[in-house]
Length: 480
Image (cartoon, rainbow, N blue to C red; front, side, top):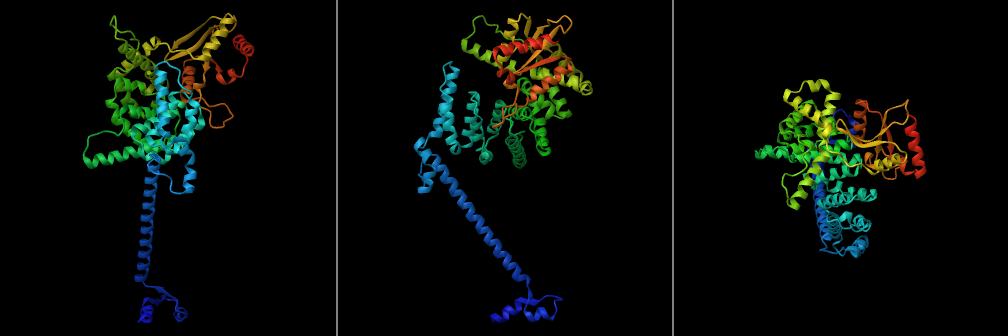
């Protein structure tokens, strides 16, 4: 019977000739092929199931080890985690977060914060044990402390791709904002964040269609603006798909923006992210909310204000003064670089932009940097008259010095590029860092205004002695 079944399951190939039939070389029937494919599919499904169970058990055990509930299973695993167990006693990652919070509280009270390097060394060791929310918080606290350690930030960032799907929209925005604050131009991570923004928005749209919800976006207007600001200021190259999703989300949220949120939108975001339709919608919203107007209102009307309320009001005013120039710079960009688009705007929008143009000279004076202060001190020693913080359109010139050559320029404008004008030096980089997108935009617009500037950068300034700095300024100011 078995031999008969074997002969029935195999037939000679069509057109194969008598040799193939004589040798017993035939083509299996479809029934046999289907049976073999079914067996293969069953094996693959069983393999995937076992692999999934193994990954689940591994994640559960890793989470238990992070929480200190279980010990390593064997000598090898114990050796791997030996340093962490001895160092932390099961809670070193929580101690890092607590130490950073205590340091932040000390700075707010005006007290001397503890040394950040021991905390940074501890954070490097416990980075693999931090969850997604703790990773973002540690990044944010180190950035607020202005701790310069590129190896630390890269070590913490290296843990994010494995947990990026666990990040909430707020944590995703905070992680990108930390990179912007540190001026770390890391295209890999910014592209990862932008792709996750797209996936989050698409998933939200699918869920809202299924549930019939009227929510507009998983991100609030402030969160979306912060994300776009971080990407544009770090010169992230948006893919076509991501840009389309972000523009769609921004178009939904612009009508709900307040004046404060409109003032947060950086000019680089307007130029790099928004198309003409979004620019028009954004400018109409600025005109409707009065964004940028009443920027010189500093003092309270109360004769004896409450100290806490007064401090909170001053802090809010300081934050607004820091970002108020965004609207004025955007107005200048649109008027100078796309006048045809400016002319096509509604009358009320052009009236609002005209008020911004007229009020640019009354913008609050920003605090000068340390480099500008050092240059001004040497100019004083040389007997050169100068002014600092002179408003020129939406910008504030660093130093405007009187010329000493009767045949040369009457004034000379010194542009002092602090380290904040450059991207953070890449890991083990040797060359001078590149200028940030904001600094390049400032230079381009000053050039369009006809302002000729003399740049003094912090990198060459640091390498000079006091005598060399004086000679350098004498040469710059003499050859006009």
